[in-house]
Image (tube, rainbow, N blue to C red):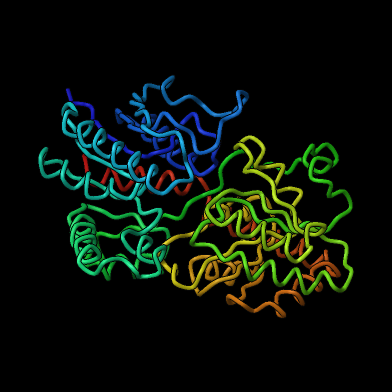
Length: 408
């Protein structure tokens, strides 16, 4: 009788989790479990976003997935030092999780927290077990960009050595697109080891309309052209360009609002700028919504905004992009040439601008307000493109095929 294949999977935020990004790992794990793999998961007991009690998500444990939850030392989430200590504590527990695993066929990690990458390499070395890295972000490049390349040169060299070696020794590295793949190859990873699997939309993607959408009244956007930035507003994201473009547009008295449904390190900076420029009537800030409300928030969106700072090209891919396409929402992207701009141009589903193109973006907003039928056409283009190239079914099948290829 053929023995069952055992897979050990690490991701910081996992079910039950209100943050929609955690649904990707849940989808991957559940699909693998349903296809004759025994999956063990290690994750944090803390949540990025508190889940709602009525989450319409299958509990992975009910289909046989075993989950080990790691507590945190500090509850404070926005302090860099306490977050780093929590992350290192998690990695220590994950190392023990991998080392003590029973008859492992494969180790898998997503890149959260960052030091899980050298952790899984060390565990693989000790247990002589192959591993896959799912690169949701690239490290240490993201850290270097965060600190504006001001890290101590010796520490930076140390990080480059341990991270790049960990990527090189992985049996496969999953990339979110060709720009990220270029960065991974620059780390010394061979081309044949890199597998591109884009992220997909999470949650319910059915169009329910806005007639019974509770967020319309909550956000006070009835009969309003609504521009929405949804998701993390961190150091990788450009908030200045869209706000300054709205500042220009605001002087022309159009009926629109920009909503930030977000959290992250740049929220307070952006909020203070809005207050200083007396833009609070046009630009509103709301907390991140739990996963079960993402569909409603996207469906009140006339035009979605995604941004990326130029020095993060190929390092991260904003996770909400597929969600907008799946729901037929046109996208305004601000940033360098990237996976996002590539898909937008192929699908003809939105607009692409470089950072600091304030006036061009303001003109685009005005044109969009005056041409809603054209926006609908762009949204339909995006939906068709998503169904053909970026769907959940396609992504989950790609992960299953990849793992079947590595462990027979």
